[in-house]
Length: 85
View (tube, rainbow, N blue to C red):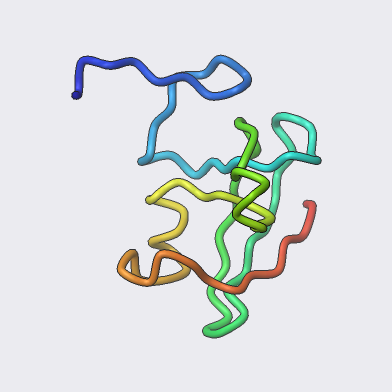
């Protein structure tokens, strides 16, 4: 429902078209370089949310926009390296 306002853990409006991400152990506004280990493509993102769900055993959750810059959306998941900038 487009009428629902979703907010991130730091109370920003969630926007899947922005270059942001969710991570548990990094401070909000930390800038990260995320690189797809399969194809070498990188994207710079800012931490503005918490997640992904710990039960999923993932290190980071990117917005659709950020993920689309390093992998095809159909892939859903990618092995990445994460570097604090």
